[in-house]
Length: 330
Image (cartoon, rainbow, N blue to C red):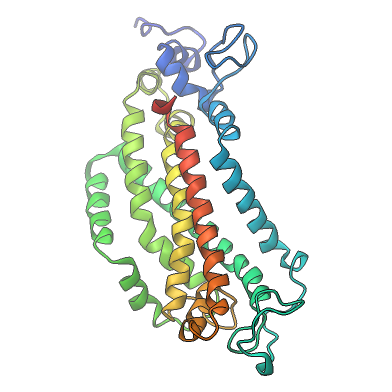
């Protein structure tokens, strides 16, 4: 049987690379095949022969984006104080003195005290750990579950694709806050795992839709069809050709969703169905401080401000990543 047009004896690796510039650019992220640049690349950087790919171009754009730099610095700071809160807060967030309840700022206690006499500054610093842990783990869980289900449905199609589409429609019809009130109201655990599980349960359909659409688009490209014609197995095509080129939209949505999950955890904790004492959480502190907003506004402003800055930083990071990974914006 004659060989497919453009194929060479070297196998599907070379055949796929010969499908044209578009196929080669898509394949660059998975196979390491790159386009040779001239003495100066299109953007004026890089010597001749320097490897280029979607990810290297995205990283170069991110380093030049002030939004990414600012949000990245904020997130790095949050991660550091989440791991080592004692670096900037030497007190105990659970140590309280009722004699100091609702007192304002004083030396050694810049944020004042809450209604139980606990140091607001210490609790604000330690609350970052809970928010970062919940946001990161929920985003990872949603990304993994949604990518696997959506990717398989988009790649194979047929009956399972129809079932997944109808299942996601059902989950999209469930209000998130109302679902949290119903599902988490029966949970007595004070750990973060019930809240993370709830977010993954109701958060995967969005990622699944994104992954499904991306996989359907990628699998129609010439380099995937060439791999299929050369006898590549389905697992190989998915892992080597489809997945690396379809993952970018999932990363963007998961990054933006991370900030949303942090805000959702605070909302559920504020309503009394999320995290529970003695866990230190910005949502719990905001809930405890809301009745005293007129007499002691500092109890509410500091944890609410920290929550707002954190959510904004992750949303800004997601926007920067989206702009860098979108070829249409180049």
